[in-house]
Length: 333
Image (cartoon, rainbow, N blue to C red; front, side, top):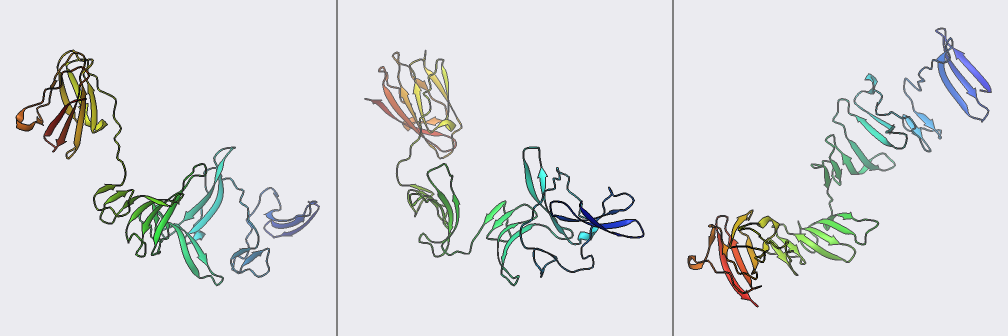
C-alpha cells in the first residue's frame, strides 16, 4: 500500500485503512502483533442499514449496481451459525473441476420449512404475484404456490393453461394445454396443439375419450384417418413347431416354404379383447397347421390350409382371455 492509517486497541487488534497505487482503497481488521492474522469486520452490529452506491439505504444491505460472488466452496459449504435465527440464504460458486462449476442457492430453513419463492413486488414492497415456487420437497410450482408434483403448472385463465415445447434446431413447436371454461372445446380437455401449423394433433376429453385427428371424441379411441399396424418379420418354421408371440403384433405372417412337415402352433402373450390375424403362405410342398387347443372353430372344425403352392389364407381370431375364436378366408388369388 502507498498509504495506511491504523486504529489500534489495547488488546492488540487493529483496524487498518489504506490506499494502493491503482487508486483503490481498502479496510482490514487484524492483529498488530501478527498482521497475517485477519479478523472479522462488523458493520452496524447494533442495527442500521448499509448502502453501496447510494446515500439512503432502505434495507440492511442496499446495493445500487451489481454484485459478484467468486468464492469457490468445492462442495463444502460454510456453516450458518447460531446467529442465523429462523433461517438464511447462501449464494455462492461451487466449482466441480478446473473446467466447470455451478452457481448454488442454498436455503437454510432454520425452524421453518424452507423453499424458494420467486416473486414480483411493487415499489411499496407489496408482493403482486408469485410466478414460481420450489417447496422443501423439491416440487416446482408455476402459477401455484402449493405444488403437489415434481412440476405443477397452473393458471387462472378461463381459456387454457399452456406449456410450449420446441427445439431451436427443429421445425415444429408444440403446446400442451388444459382448457378452461371459456375455451371453444369446453372445459377440462387435454390438447396436443401443433403451433406451427395451427392444428390439434390429439385430444383427451374430460370423459377420458382420446381423439386423433378430431376434437370431439365420443369413444375411448376415435381416429380420423388411417390406423396402420407394421407387419413383423415373417415366421418361417424349419421344424414341426412354431410359437406366435402376439406381443410383437396383432397381425402375423407365417410362411410354410421351409417347413418339413405339418406345423404345430403355440400362442403366447395375447391380451383379452384383442382382434388377431395370421396370413399363411403355403410352400411348394403343402403342409397343414395344427392349432392350439385353445382355438375354437365354427362347428368345431378347423380349416385345412390351402394346398396350392404360394396359396394365401387369412385366419382371424377374437381372443376373450381364454379362447381364440377363429375364422378362415382361404385361397386368396
